[in-house]
Length: 198
Image (tube, rainbow, N blue to C red; front, top):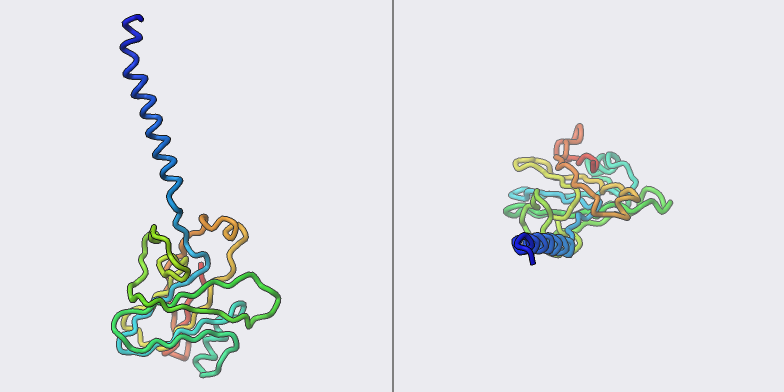
């Protein structure tokens, strides 16, 4: 065997091993469970402190301002979900699933809400890599934050509108929406209204 061939063997072996390492690393990365946002889910972060707060989730397909005016006038709105949060230290998070595509039933499709036992503020980073249950606020696609020191006692929130068919079919394409702060309802300083998901 010529001397030149002997000199190439270590280089060829290193190149083959390098390619194998790259392939193994790529396969390992693809085999990790993908972390997904919960499409259409909103997390409403509410400081409870010394003030009792009420989170009112407007019905799907109904204008949120109608619900807000009804709350200010103490008039119930059919299809709303009401969560009362008593005064307590720290914050509470109310998790609201998104609306589903219209069934043609009308504007009073009821909503839902969950209050996780954890009092941690949902993180701003990527969702946890650990498998999560539905309603994990860290996986919410949208977040509504009531500022500390707010005097509002009623927080009116609309669920996110139904996701596009593309996102329904490929939820890994979903992006986190920007955090929003609810705005006061004109003429009713104790009621604030969250902007829509966007």
